[in-house]
Amino acid sequence: MKRCFSLPPRLQTVADLVPQSKSLADIGTDHGRLPVWLLLHDLIPHAVATDLRPGPLSKAKDLAKRWEIGADKLSFRLCDGLTSLSPQDAETIVIAGMGGETIAEIMADAAWTADPGHCFILQAMSGMDGLRRYLSGAGFRISKEILVEEGNTLYIVLYVEPEGGRKLTEGEIWVGQQNRDDPLRGRYLEQELFKLRRAVAGLERSQRPEDHEKKKWYELAAWEVEQMKKEWDSWQL
Ligand SMILES: C[S@@+](CC[C@H](N)C(=O)[O-])C[C@H]1O[C@@H](n2cnc3c(N)ncnc32)[C@H](O)[C@@H]1O
Image (cartoon, rainbow, N blue to C red; front, side, top):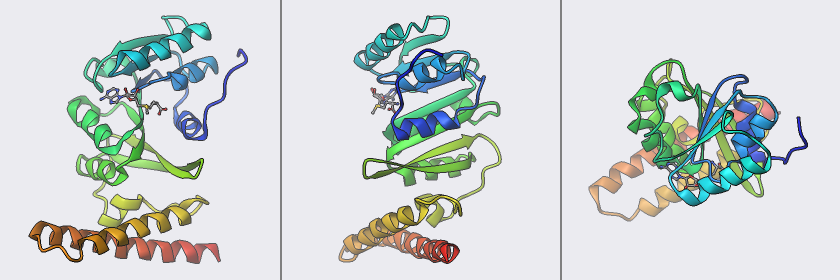
């Protein structure tokens, strides 16, 4: 392997979850660092990098050129989400660095994502609840949730498979599933509990019937996350 650049912690966590020796598609590649890094480390045989906009895609092309990655290893597509990809183009699909709702829309717009045979590594910058709600409703299985800290922010990287999912509870929609070993989990639970309580307080005075319904959901999720936090705290003793 040539001398190589390093990835920031968030992208390194994504890279660590990528199955070796399988083709990859990086949707919304922007700078293209993920596929270039994986190819330079010989971890994947080839990749396709896509983006909605020509500017980011040309940054990715420049990076590949700079590191002498040939077109046989990395190809580029200007497209919205998975629209120009067929199921045969890649075994692993990465969608990182976008909002959770956008990631859910990209998955929902490509019906083949629900078929067996692919894995998805998903990392949302916001709207994790919306993303988990979509995955749970569509029958996907979130087999791993890894927390990673970059700067002062906690990010979550999901490893998702099309089969074997179960309906998540309202609390799990907000904070995912319990993982005893993750040292950042306690802080994450606290952070999300704070957001849920703030959302409940914000809806307290609303007279709108739909807000009343929403408040009940948030209260239920907050109660459940509180129990998870207590359980997590008891594991730390
Ligand atoms: C913040 S960058 C993330 C780059 C990289 N994936 C990462 O995680 O560091 C988001 C990129 O996604 C692209 N993007 C946003 N919506 C998209 C869509 N629907 N399809 C493809 N690319 C999209 C944007 O143009 C931008 O380059």
